[in-house]
Length: 118
Image (cartoon, rainbow, N blue to C red; front, side, top):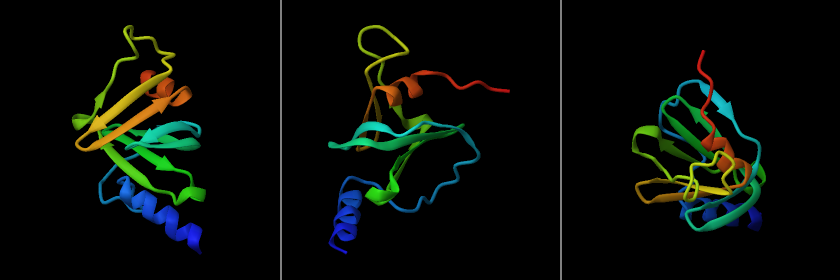
């Protein structure tokens, strides 16, 4: 019980919510679980990115409370990969309003790769 309360408190404090109140539309693609710092809190192999036409959803693994954070594409800045725009960057940062998500490894590469449109 303490674990559930603690994970809910951490999710709330870093801006993650269990339910979204936005219209996301259909999923374009979904990453595997990876490493990320969400608003200063590090998570290992427990964050994934779900991409939509109008934004990204940052989702925490269910074991850690299933917290979600919506990043609207129109208001989210995606940092370039270091000094060059290398698709296989080791990290990228997504920033919108007060939220800062540092993606590492494969999650950074996922965001760097454009999705194919039909």
